[in-house]
Image (cartoon, rainbow, N blue to C red; front, side):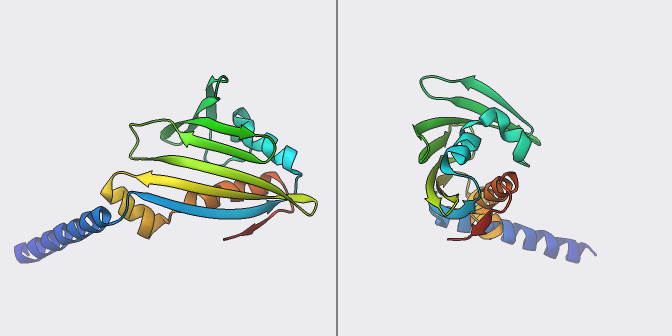
Length: 172
């Protein structure tokens, strides 16, 4: 029995060491991009994206938003589950481009999302490009091999599509 416990403990330590080593071998920075066509015109989609106080109405992962400042750049804190993340808008070009950045240096990750909006038929093609950093090697491994770098973008676009019926998602 003791021998089995030792073998299991050694195997767990080896797995942890492999995960940490693989995480250190991965680059801190990554770029991920996804696109969806939303059945609203660009101005209306842009309004959804910039009305951060309205996020709890259509985003499944956000329960509350605190607007911290509106000028010179809007800054807000999103609350959901057990986490809170502070963001700021670093570029706002209605209704075609929005760049937001994680404004919390204490997190084990960071980066920007660039939203590009382009008319497509009666709706809007929304393309989100994440330029992310994952500082913790274990989170880096998990982000790359378990969750995927596009998981948060995919969830965001799925929520956006629900907010705008008749929309479609296309992984790009």
